[in-house]
Image (tube, rainbow, N blue to C red; front, top):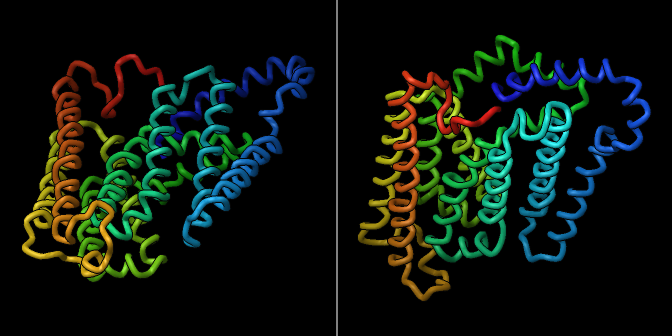
Length: 330
């Protein structure tokens, strides 16, 4: 929500410039097809077709039939939005170049996690399944949030619809609901519940056997992680933010330790599967537990240290958001 509001002044300035250079625009409008709404939708449709064709030649499951086009449309929307914003307010203004790179990297991580070969390996290896989940929650989600996607998506809309969307996000009821949802206790709880519930043997086994439940599992992991990182990145770095990260480190590490040191496997389906690395089901589970425990723990430690550093220098800088470089102009 805050991303769109931050772009509003730029839209006003660009509107003034358009009014003062109307004659020039009339003569050059035909040479700038990117400003055309039809062109934008054509770019999005092309992404849909290309990704759908790429999927058709692959060996994805039916549940992934709509995934490639969806990923392609999201990337196209972001690219069109950033292009429109930069044309209106100046290159790398509103959304800095490093944020675009973060979104692109997060998008690639999302593709890696949700498609083959990793998705197929996750059906026969618990360790691969854990790697898939960690990429979703600890690589793709924070990078996508840092990319300020809502701001980019807003700039895909024509000017009149953009102002309408902005007014909608400024509605008191919407702001109240959004503020409650991204509050640290709520976002923390949603993320923790998603993690623990889906790793309960009954729910995890259901995800292995039923594609719709498997898709729901991944959607809830991604959505709860986006909420978690959105709440973290958009708040003032303080002791609560540091505690927010460290407690997540503790409970995820504890789950990883339980999986690592369990005397027997939790998930019977993997006992019957042919492990691609020749591991027993218990060894594979131990490896998966270590993936959740060590690499994931390292991400939370780094995030906690960054927040602590921002908090300690807050009296000198006064900047409201974490992980924002000193020379960023957006």
